[in-house]
Length: 127
Image (cartoon, rainbow, N blue to C red):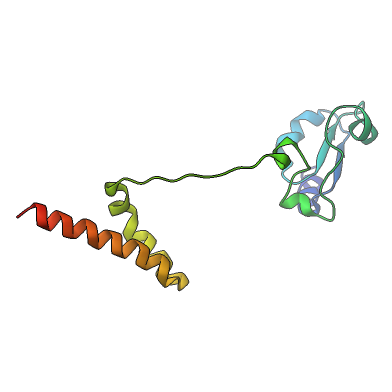
């Protein structure tokens, strides 16, 4: 069964039926499947038509990277960031280095200019 689970995780099937004794104990080892059907009383067709799970699932091994269509598929997410001056002082040097390595000079400069401004204000207030 361990070999079967390893193969299944590589194959990443659209539907995976686990019909063995103690099927539930194997669920935690499954990483890549569109939809998993556990035990002798859970045929794939029930998932397709009646159990309430989604029938729009990743095929051709795409379950390694994607799940099925879900409510999340129709939600829009937006991230918001807000750093303090101290936060930029701490993160800035790392961001400068990563931007430099990636060749993104404008990204690096956006941080460098702000760090220089922070430094200049600290010098002028310490006089």
